[in-house]
Image 1 (cartoon, rainbow, N blue to C red):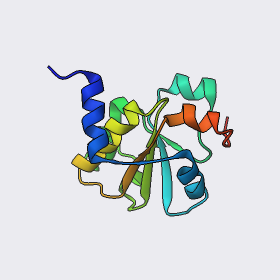
Image 2 (image 1 turned 180 degrees about the vertical axis):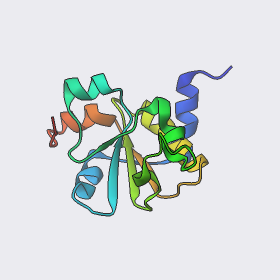
Image 3 (image 1 turned 45 degrees about the vertical axis):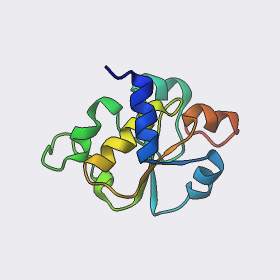
Length: 126
């Protein structure tokens, strides 16, 4: 049996990871969308990266699939760069890996997640 830590380590071998500094440079780029995969309660408590789209990790596959019309999030298939993030970088690594498995090409995730974003005093939208 693989542990969750091993799954995340494997995902990190397959997906691009960016730093907060690199993410900040993409913040106002019209060709980039930040995807927050945290739970709603986490976002309500802490806020999010400005302009980020919320797609709970638990429904990501359904949100990507255009055939699941009731759950599909069109921006995921927009061709824009998708920067996934969570609290610390575990769920976002798995999310970016899943997105790639489903055929999305321009994806990465934020190293250290929202915690790293906060530690860098980067802007937060409440």
